[in-house]
Length: 175
Image (cartoon, rainbow, N blue to C red; front, side, top):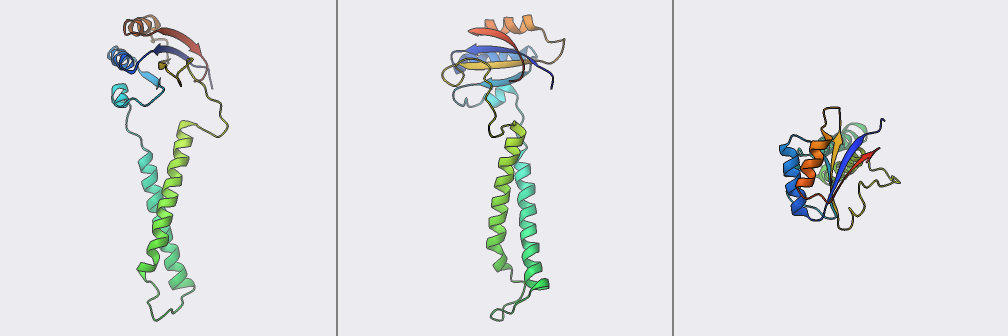
């Protein structure tokens, strides 16, 4: 991968950060990411982040797991190894419910976890890369990525400083 260029602005409080994000977006800059020591409710809407598609992964895998469980149980109890147990019919649907439910929940949940880790590139053993000192303690950071030559760094710096940024730095590499 090629090295990326970023502009990182740090802030002291969440309200100043939210104000800065609104101003940056009003000037048509795209916010790459926000770092904060705690969740800020409503920040997704302010940043313009779309809703995640992870529920679709859960739904598709869950439905597939449920159908597979029913089909496997039906095949084994009716077609492959039918047993007469107490005169009950071979394809008793009530007997299939617990296994079907458990496999649907288990595989749906596991697929969501794996899709999240894959999508966010959070693999075991990966080193953290923080854009600014103290973002896990008491500092808030706003990161803009310079995608192309049309990115106006001077204007971005001016907007960030006007909105209360304590420091604005330009960084190279992966964040």
